[in-house]
Amino acid sequence: MAKFLFGLITGVVLSVAGLLLLFFALARSFRESPPAVAQNSVLQLQLSGDIPERPPVEIPFGAFAERPAPTVTGVWMTLRKAAVDARIKAVVLEPESLSVGWGKLEEFRADLERFKKSGKPLFAFLKTPGAREYYLASAADRIYLGPTDWLNIKGMRVELMYFKKTLDKIGVDVQVEHDGKYKDFGDMFTRTSMSPETREVMTGIVDDLYSNLVGRIAQARLKTPDAVRDLIDQGPFLANDALHDGLVDQLRYEDQMFADLQQKVNSGELHKLPAGRYLKVPPDSLGLEGHHRIAMLVGDGNITRGSADDDGVSDDGIRAAGFNKLLRRIAGDASLDGVVVRIDSGGGDAVASDEIWREMNLLSKKKPVVISMSDTAASGGYYMAMTGDPVVAYPGTLTGSIGVVFGKPNLHGLYDKLGISKDMIARGRFAAIDSDYSDLSAAELAKLKEGIDANYHDFVAKVAQARRSPFDRIEPLAQGRVWLGDQAKANGLVDELGGLDRALELVKQKARIPASENVTIVMYPPRRSILDVLFGRASESAVESRLRRLVKDWPPELWAKGGLLRIMPYTVNAQ
Image 1 (spheres, one colour):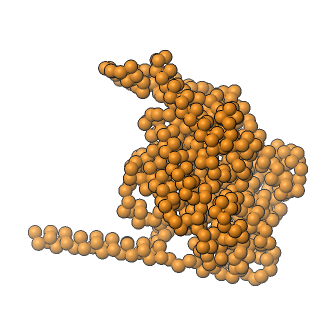
Image 2 (cartoon, one colour):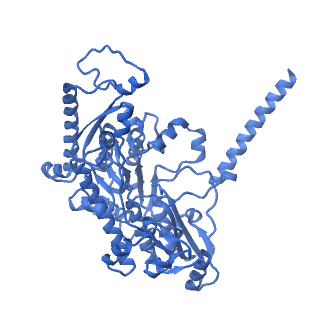
Image 3 (cartoon, one colour):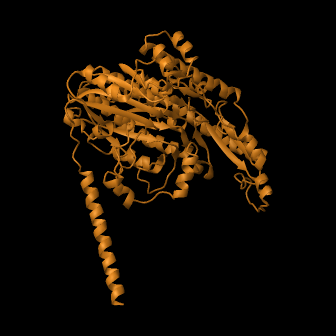
């Protein structure tokens, strides 16, 4: 017994000591001083995969330590700092396997072009680049490619996937009702190919994006658009062909590229500085902050209702309960002089979108607000932005999709195949309207359509009010149609084309802050620490998390909870 008690006490003491050591190690990590930046440094800007709007959780200590992942605002601020930092002599851009949308690409390219105005060299080193990587690299002074590498530019395409035949095989029927002839969310379950309306929209999107790609390359490489189109028709390119056709400047290995850069700078030995380390250099140390404070509130992902204890920092999309808490916190903070709301969302739950819209409008009455749209701000993501404040989008931002949709699966056939049957007793004319064991009756369909029509009319009316335009002018532009940012601008659905710089200029104007004055950016939601994860509430199980990643475009709770949806009819990943 004594040995047992001694072992138990020893175990408790060691556990407590271990937790204390972990806590102090974490605390020390988060008090880490900014990194030293050597003179004659060259900033290595490595961009790959998806670049999120807000930072993931960092583990900054021990064997688990990682460099901070770049974010959209992080890249923007990093290049702003590098432009004025005398220790930074040049920037080397190294994009690889990017999966971001064309809105973010336009932001990064604008950031690179602004950096070039500093007069410092900007070199790009490419590794089997596709259209995205080359689009960014075309902003550089020189483009380098490995001698045996190749340039994978061959055009652009959009592919949509349809599951109707699969569902037929397993006995599942999906009924989808919507307002707006372009609101074809659900076609993947009910069709085997694009509808004429979808083909019309997709053709317009691809043509517009491709024209922008061709135009930017032509401008950067001093060629005509027709010449660039002819070149792309010959791609992909071996390294020697890319050099011969003037698409790259040099075929060199990476060390040779840095040697060329050192010769170009002509200021002694260069020191490589990863952008992840440089990100920790505070902007105020370079005079890039001021006494005026502007909130940068990021809302990204699908819109759901969330729960009462959501705090707004979840990585699982925009949860109305938590996001509205952040909106109220910002509205009540007297130290904040204005707000840029950054939206990257294809929409989601109709009620949740409306709840956020309400809080956004309340915020607009208390603070100067500007909306900055990222890759996507469509359907519910567009709805929440309808405050009447200035809306800024990129030419390639997917926006609009003003429409409402409702979908219900009938699993009767699947149950039959599995040997499952259901028996029902119901009271109330429409008690079985959401049953998964039968199709909608004519009366149920009419009842459902009544709600969809009312919701759609409300959506269009709120857009018309915010855009200060008659209902009859907005409604033909609605119909669930997805527009690109430049198309939306031409139709009066957004105010200006631009990115973070333009959004800040506009919010400073509204807040009567001089244009030349620097401001301090306050990010919302704040960065999550490892302590938040360790001691916070786990929001979902590992199984739920994996399922969410599998169906990240349309998370299961949007269907499982029923109700009307304001969500984009599809996702666009133009290759």
